[in-house]
Image (cartoon, rainbow over all chains, first blue to last red; front, side, top):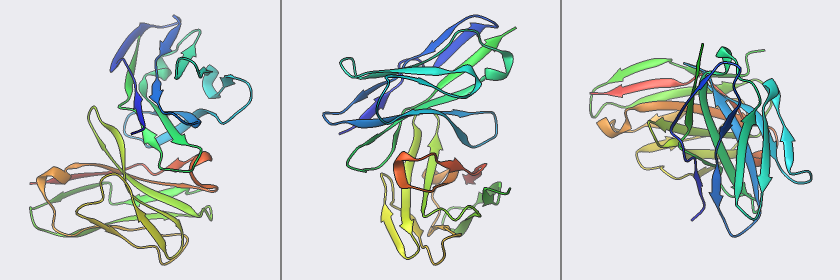
Length: 113
Length: 113
């Protein structure tokens, strides 16, 4: 069965430091990949997505992610975080056969002043 | 723009009661879905719809019913509430199915006692 793993449930990081949130997916077929962010008491909003083409994807708020097919990973990065980046981040995947979207368990990013 | 609107925001039910969570979108999106969010488990798909009159089950459909009589509305019905249904429920819509950006409502926090 397809699954999405986010290896870190919580990531504390100091303001202006870089951060990487890890995401791995298990699938024997091609997938589409997404990162969503959830700010406190809000719904999710899309940060970025990978459908095809360049493996480095740039999103909103200075985030980027790199698709690595050989490692089945789609890690999210930001070179310098701000307090406002404190939120829950979800990786998601869907098979190209248009199956259901599968979300990872989420990573809670806490930015420390 | 209203986007995706969910009501109510909070609800407490007694075991065995029934209720309907409302979801409405004003973006003319064909695809709508319901998720539940539980700690450490990410979002799990309950039911989804690819257009008016068409619904299908997701990962965790038991205990829930949906209908899609109009493009705008996608209510979720709990038939006989159980404590295991205590969760945060999110409705989402998208224009082109699973690979386009999903827009989420702000969620309904449901407690079943």
